[in-house]
Length: 400
Image 1 (cartoon, rainbow, N blue to C red):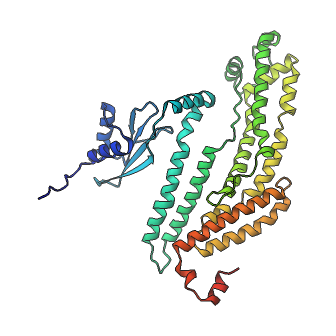
Image 2: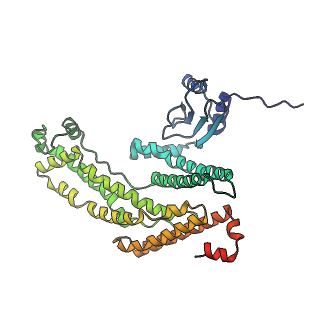
Image 3: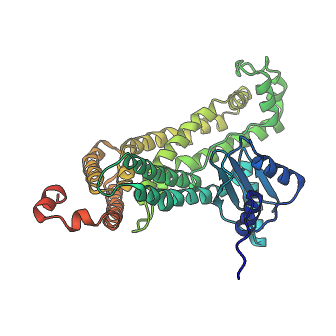
């Protein structure tokens, strides 16, 4: 007779899942202690994160997951039940020698913030797949086919979550630069010590000797020149960025909305950066030294006002464009409402100064692909209502 399957403990389940999905062995006093604490009877911890960091070391925590990792799992416990649920948050990835070199170069260019966000798109994509291909079908299976239930609203929310995760992923993949104006360390230190005070009185701030220091002035002037270059990388985007690539499987309309709303937010952060005490002190010091070339260029050559006007105009038109509503439609009623809302919204483009006819046509083309994709999806999920209704009913309720 064959032997029955050996009963596995929760600790064995965590160990085997980590070996299978992450290709790691859970060793080390801290790792074992954290797992034991999580599994201890009466523990208030309901989740356990296991991940592989960039140095290939194993990390565990019951509180937080680091933003950058080479693979991660989440173990969940419902109440005091000994049964655990395992969710793959990011598949195991392996860095080749070339990948490591690229990662090092990226870290040098983008800094710690850029390196930390490198794993965000993959994790967000996975969460979107869970929402779309796991959570929504499960809720659909729980519903009564004949009667609308409270789960209808839950399905709508899950579809909205799918759209929101997609938008967050596009934001993580965005090439829109963030403007961070870094001042000279000496000036930054003086500004920090005099927080809340005026940055105009150079003598009172103890920088009168720097007004005659040509080497120091050249250094901060070069810094201002770099600020201008950094800002112009952002302000040229409204006139140089083409419409996203349109194809039947993509979401070019959502990408277009996401680009302009994100660009508007990024541009609105620039005046905030320019009002930082260390930035104001840098400019005041250059003016006191009669180094007007850089300060005038910062005021007049960045194109910030024009870019803000252009972007705000376009974002105002696109912000309420109902493409997310169309993408989230789960039945013919919601689909019809979304299409009508889109047709009602399009005439508003006449009030936009910068969203031209060519770009508007591309937006409509991208939207038709979304419409086609949603129609096919609704037909697959709910074929009976439309395929088996009488023509008169179809003409009254569907045809428009």
